[in-house]
Image (cartoon, rainbow, N blue to C red; front, side):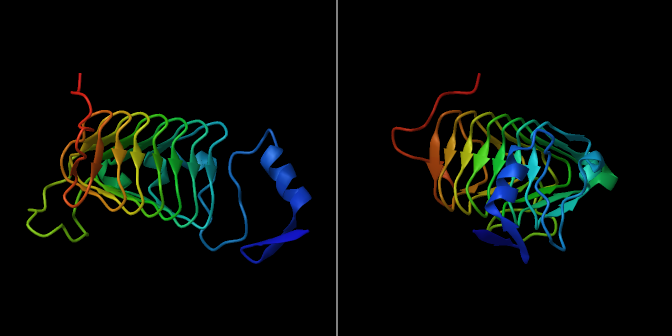
Length: 200
């Protein structure tokens, strides 16, 4: 059996050999948007994967932890020339089509995972702010360990999503989310009975 990957045929045996290789750091297939080589990043952890096609700008200001996976059609856009910094903690999982726009600092803690088409931004500059929201200057975003970001949600500037929090599908997060809470809606608010616990 043979599979087609971006116009290139690969046998199942080749794929298994690629995935099991102890020297692997990223899966590279034919594409016009290959990820930069690992040495181009500020840090590229052991067992980390970036699956093309992807759009990565400012790789020298991106720290990728161990066992991180960034799936196809994602964008990591960092304003490295102005000192911005993006940190993806160990075991982060970014699903298909995730966009992270970083003009100051965005940090994802260990074990953070997302569904498809999530947007995380520390600045509305270059984007359209939600109605009624004054576009702020860039403000750091922190998504703490083990948090989950649901399909199509948006995490805005200056927000902290607490450890173990669950952000529902399509939520627009403009305020901090308590650790362990479940939030949904636009603007995001806590589900009844799932307000989480206060930050320590």
